[in-house]
Length: 145
Image (cartoon, rainbow, N blue to C red; front, side, top):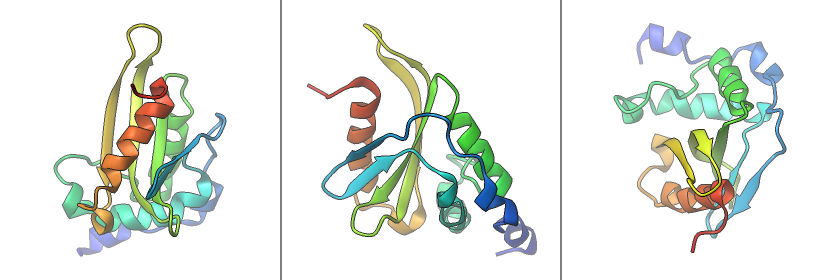
């Protein structure tokens, strides 16, 4: 890890003070994962996993939060009216495995959104994000038929 990379992946004292999402906390449970609204207490572990996953995530995303400011921006964007962010966590221990961002959400007859997601390298290729996807779609648009 380069000195620049290490410096940009530190959790500063502001991580614990990151603003919490101003919406009602959402949660859905599957057999192996829980998808839920991220909260400020998730900052340290999400930043740690994001930093450890940089090579795994590149070039698909550069938005994984690698410092306290980026995590605060994640929570702030999650609070927007037509945006939802879901942290996918293992049920067995609550460890974050990845994240979904839904934006430009449209309800009614034309149910749609832009959906981005990523799995942290430590938890990749285990089917956990696939399971989380179904839970996220159920939460956004109701039970699938």
